[in-house]
Length: 320
Image 1 (tube, rainbow, N blue to C red):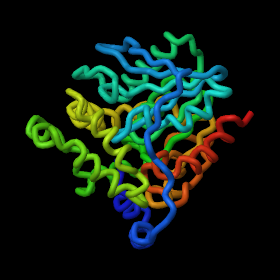
Image 2: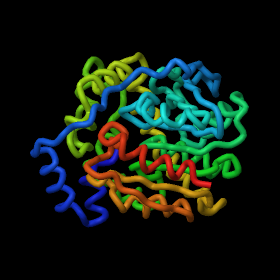
Image 3: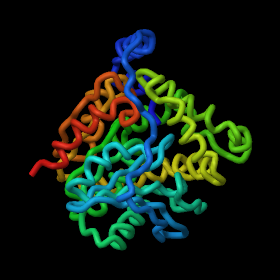
Image 4: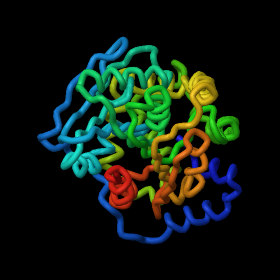
């Protein structure tokens, strides 16, 4: 999770972004419905064995494969609107990340290179040789770890609004006290959060969106219930977040050994978050990067502006 305040400080755009965010929150605008909708009957869900546990994976559609990876504050459910469109001409694979959503809760294995190896095993089990990736937040980190370890299995990559540990401006962002939540973990923290998961998630939805009301009550309640499941907060804070230091070292090593990614990459930033600076961040890891900016959106692009996001993503994925 990355506050637009932190990103703007790095890119020297704080006043403009801050003022724009306040203005967006203060004026009445027509709001899109961000409600989490049920998955279509033609998507099947199953628990797929991975190292020390299982991952819940939804699969639907036919055609070239696309993998959709979520981040913290969401589960695979965030991708339902995009998946419903993609299934018409693609096989769509939507995992809940390790320890999150409906997946199991192993104690270890949260390094992103390890999760990428689990993803490769999931694709093997599904008989999928290669796939495009669409990722957001922590999903970007798993997506990069997959693409750099399995470049021949990654046809193209859409990354959305979160940088990669150890690369680009990561160290500047990580040191800022305003990303206190990166080190917000431990048994006492979990006791404080227990039963108050909605309060914790609201902090991210409100602070990292252009217009908080776009993330409606049903959506907030839906994810709060999933993060209230036994082990979910522990695995998010003490698993996914706690692995960032090792992820940074792994990414620096992989970049030095393997060089930048060469497959086509689309880097999408919300205009109240990373904006057009995001393509530059992903450019530290990939050579063939184009950028796109979603208007009137913060970090939560698929919740805030799903129609815009889909309109940008589809032509990139379907390009020859």
